[in-house]
Structure formats: structure tokens, C-alpha cells
Image (cartoon, rainbow, N blue to C red):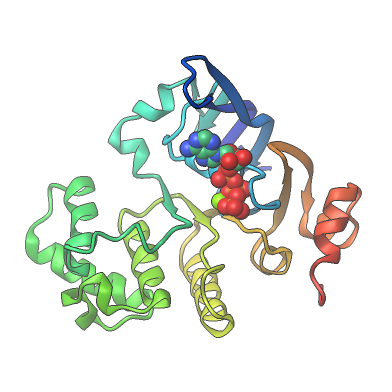
Length: 263
Ligand SMILES: Nc1ncnc2c1ncn2[C@@H]1O[C@H](COP(=O)(O)OP(=O)(O)OP(=O)(O)O)[C@@H](O)[C@H]1O
Ligand SMILES: [Mg+2]
């Protein structure tokens, strides 16, 4: 058995909450006592209704949110509190996230080349511009876009094309773990299938662990080896796809599955 690439133990994440016109700040725990492991090359699904804490968990794993309690261990190195938010570039590069709100993630004033090149300059400063140019073309081709797209601006792309650019940018730095937050939920069914096929084929080319966030059980069933179910910030069930999707034990999971007509 492999040791975990990512090992989250008893994690809590809170947001500050302040009433209007009040100076009293209280904490709202969006994640409570979450434990979750992702092994190298494995795809773990994270499902749950809107507001259950899925994006919060993804953001915690990329160091955008601190841990209120608990620990996060990545490649054998453990972090508590804010430690992982200040992780060195070397570690940050290993975990990339494709965000839920993909319309807002591309800078409208930057060409697609500029967007992807930015990540390359940051993480591979030793390489030349000619190398970066070639790498951007390679990445665009890998995600099924024409290299000509490099000179486009985000407004010239469709939703599906933008999502491919987001995936290319995440892959640019060669992560070991890719967090996909609702990558297909805003796309129409045929484009959804194309993006899911793309992610599957990328994972066939090289080992890439994935934390696949979705509210759609059918998509998770297709993409993942393991599934974790979140309800109101708590993990109510986890297991293999077979266990969770076909023999769910928790009533909340059963309800989520009943909502999928053809599973
Ligand atoms: N920046 C924030 N400040 C305060 N509360 C927040 C913030 N972001 C999220 N929350 C709250 O945390 C809870 C979990 O939100 P989160 O975005 O993680 O849910 P989600 O499962 O990703 O939902 P969705 O499926 O709609 O994307 C929600 O109750 C939400 O209102
Ligand atoms: Mg979300």
C-alpha cells in the first residue's frame, strides 16, 4: 500500500462572521473534523450539496485558507494553522487548483500566452522565453486547443475553451495533485464530456492525483476511485466508488444518489 500524497487529519476551517453594525466577530465552521487521504495517482471525489464546504476544502488544500484545527500532511511534511498558506513555492507548485468560477479566473487584459507564461516564469525561472513559447504551444495542444489560441484574449473564448486554458495553466507547472472544483458544472453536456475525457486522458499519460469536487454523483462515479461525502461541513461517508455510489450507508448519500436518474 502506498503512503498518502495528501493526508488531512481532523481538519477544521472557519470563516469570521460579523453581524451588521456589530463589532463582535464569531466563527462559523465551514469544515468540521475532516479526515481525508489521497494517494499518488489516485482520484478522490468530493460530493455534497451547495454550501456543504467542498470549495472550502479545496481552498484549504492549496493554502488559500488556514486550518483552525487539525493537520495537513503533503508528501510526508506536516502543516498546522497558517503554515501551509506560507508554504514555499517548491511545494505550492505541486498542488494546482482549477477553480469553480472560471469566468473570473482569467485576467481579461492578459493574452492566453501571457496567462500560461506567467505560471512558467514563476515556477521555472531558469528557462528561456523560447522554451516557454514552445511549452505554451505544447500545453494548448495537450488540452485540445489550437496553438493559435495563445494570441487570444479570454473574451474571445467560449466557456469550454476557457476551462481548457485553466486546465493547461494548472498543468503547466507539472503538479502531483490537481484539484478540480466543479470543472464541468457550468458547461453544456457535450462540452462536459469532452473536458472529462480530456482529464482522463491526461491522467493516462502521467500519474496525476486528483481531488475532484462536484455536486454531481454521476460525474464523480465516472471520474473517481474513491468518494467522500460532505454534509454541512462534516464528512458523512467515504469509501470506494462501488461502496458509496452503489451501496450508500448514510441517508444523506442515499438522497444524493436518488437525485441522479441513471446511476
Ligand atoms: N468567504 C467566505 N466567508 C464566509 N463564509 C463563507 C465564505 N465562503 C464560503 N462560506 C460559507 O461556507 C460554507 C461552505 O461554502 P463552500 O463554498 O465551501 O460550499 P460548496 O460546497 O463549495 O458549495 P457550492 O456547491 O455551491 O459551490 C457555506 O455556508 C458558505 O456560505
Ligand atoms: Mg463550491
